[in-house]
Image: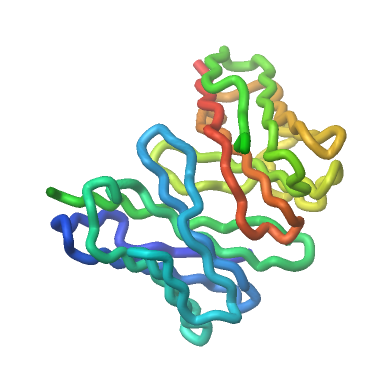
Length: 115
Length: 114
């Protein structure tokens, strides 16, 4: 099956700086890559996603890039704010066959933004 | 509109007892997913429903785990003869289409087996 690895496991940045979280995946058939933000004790929230026919997607301060050849994708947060502090999870989906719909998650990155 | 809801929010049970966890997906969403999140870990896929059928049960960790979905809506995850290693947060998600894109999560049920 698919294997998603995520780095770093923890990331501390000063308010206003940028943060980058990287993920790699193993199955070249994966075609959907969402990112979730999970605050302590709360549900994972979908913050941005990208499909394999697109190389980059932006939504205000958040962007995701995808390199299909290298099988890696990254989350970029610019002008970080203390409220960005949370655990971020990347995921990948093969999107076909018997595993249609299954998301394979990375182990998460604890982002801390210091004021 | 209303999001995914789950009940109970917390469940403490004794080892060996059976538990039932409930998930109400977003109205109109055809696909429903169960995941498990152990302390400090990522999310582990358990099972996926497309309508009332479960094309992918391969994530269920043992035959003590089962799930059903009736009427294309509410789903119940049942764990029989609970073990301490079953302690985790059980998360449910739903999506409009069956392709798995844009899954929205419920708040989870925190299960503690003593």
